Length: 414
Image: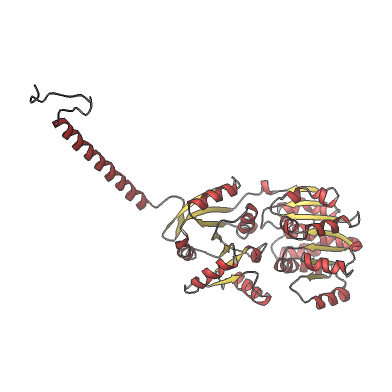
């Protein structure tokens, strides 16, 4: 399937057995087809579009551009594909908004790379200044397509795609389908092959809801970190909420770090490295900071609040259970949050309510809870029956039969 130089690297990283999305998309991409590739998160989409694109770029001597929504994801993709690009003697460069613009231009001019991994803003800056020749583009890959096309310069990307040569290809990859990926043909004025393997991919992630009021969320979060083999990402809806709870959480003994769009590049790289190495067991993050991050062996994803969309829930959940490893997603909230979450998921996932039993999550309440509840109910019933008997006895003495509801002579009223 792959050239020998790539096979050796795949074997080195224990990735020599292709995943379903890699297997289905390899030949069409290598042969120049434009396609929409949909697969669950953590199933090898980067190599699915990356390897055949590199091979085709080598064969055509063209230029491949890979678009990523964030700087972190662009760097991550560059690092993931760099060994394979080197094996094919292809030069690769990341052009990102957070990088030094002057230095990037110098490298672009001097090295003449065949593969560019870009964030949308930096790409369009260089295209508008004619620093990148769009006529030389043979492959345009839009990763996390639902995100980029929905929120980031969709019109510019559409215009760029429509102005590519007819022999070039456009690849849209993601974990969820949006109205834009559904209408890719209208957006780019070309035919797309759709390869969706999501229904065939068995889920190894369990989805739980833990009922807890806002005032006790931090306490429950601390208990979650004490579960066996815990290595978790906690998602917050905003930087403010994240900072607030980080300040309180700093008094606990749990090792944690905070990751958001305010974290500088050097600190971010150090945090992610420590998290991957297990020096940190808990990472507090926002969606903007953690989108698409590929971190091995994350066992838990915790939603501190219910996500605002199904798409957000899907991508948060995708940080665990990667490459068919087991994972757990826990959402914290009250009964109102549970109703909102069930509407949001709309049968997309099997959602279980869980309770704490020591430091274990259990599907049903602990037995001691049930016993207390039964005793309480039994006492209430007995008390009610006792009052009934007293009332009936009192009414009977007055000459009223409680069952028949009629007067009865007691010998006094003859």
